[in-house]
Image 1 (cartoon, one colour):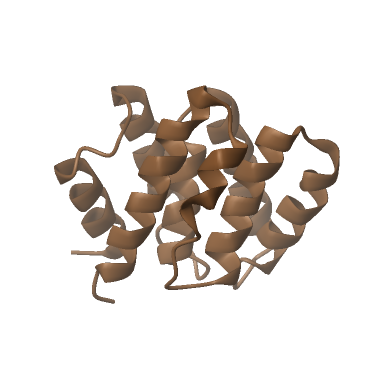
Image 2 (image 1 turned 30 degrees about the horizontal axis):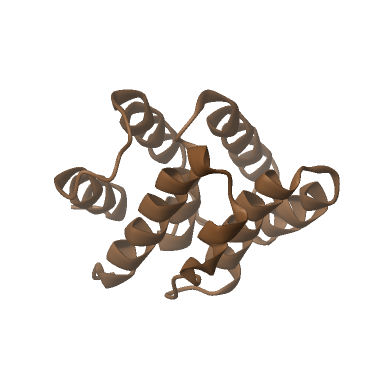
Length: 142
């Protein structure tokens, strides 16, 4: 079983998806990039975070298209794009982008939960689930 399947099954078993749409968008995003050279656990974490709503999933998919078109071997271009985007977003959006950057910059580690204090209440459940997903993804073999 590949990494994408392992991650999806484990997150579903733990009931971390917030809705059927969250689950479907996550699967769609992973299906699209699971065979790319830049596919890794950290990308799965970012995909989980991005797939919670339509707008974020579309933005993530566009970034994946750019990585594929540019024949990216790693996620450095995604990290750079997120850093640049942080300059023009609201504090809440910056917090989500920072979490994505933290996933990419610190493989095998889950960011501090203090991030939850910077978010509006509507976003706390997705970030809380993303942090739990991060911990679980890191425990997977391979």
